[in-house]
Image (cartoon, rainbow over all chains, first blue to last red):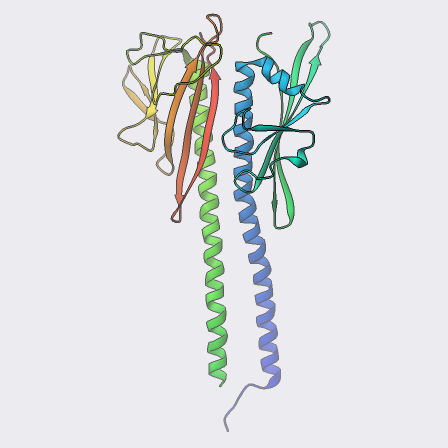
Length: 159
Length: 171
């Protein structure tokens, strides 16, 4: 008599195979998502660094222009830099950062910098102006929002 | 019948597994490429900044005699591919894209004639350019540097552009 699989054997086989496939699919989904996230993090950090370097050079070149930009709007200004070419000409000022980059940088990232001017007055020293700089690069991925942030303070070399 | 079902299941599952495996490997290669480009690009920037900020006193022409940074109040940079530097101890060195290894940035000391590479061959550096200017006689020169770090990852070239400015400190 020819032996064949019983129904219970087939059910057990399908159950084990399904568990294996479901677990593998979950692990693979997480792995692909994490890889993609890491790639975009590296790119976002690079975009932040690029903007910070450019702002530093602008600060060294012309402190007054950067101060003017920081005081354009009451309570600080948000400038959106939505192209790889960084310059004041390509930047747009917005009251709210959520309005930044209708066409995202590299079709994914929204990059903006918040500038606010203040006066630093330590006791015993003459007061000096400074600019608080917060650079953000945001992006959306798989329904989640991600952001990399840089925060620093600029002070003039010469006044 | 059972054999056909078994072969059918394997024929469906195996390609799917291989496909997913290759997607993950491809992503890993792209991720590694980005990390390598970022690491080496940052390292190049750090080295050039260190040389310019902490050692350079003058940006000169190829003879190391004439200072070349123009005196302008609104910089309209003219970029050049090689920079010649006199350092604070009167040593001469230059930074350029090496013609023998066109994908590497070289830092060449004139005396003794010693060449150092600022990146490895795992990434390519392109469009290395420098410009410099001085706002007035009493403020040291500012040097702008830009370059692109590139790498090929699975038939696709990816790149990270770099640009930064440094003001000399030893003027």
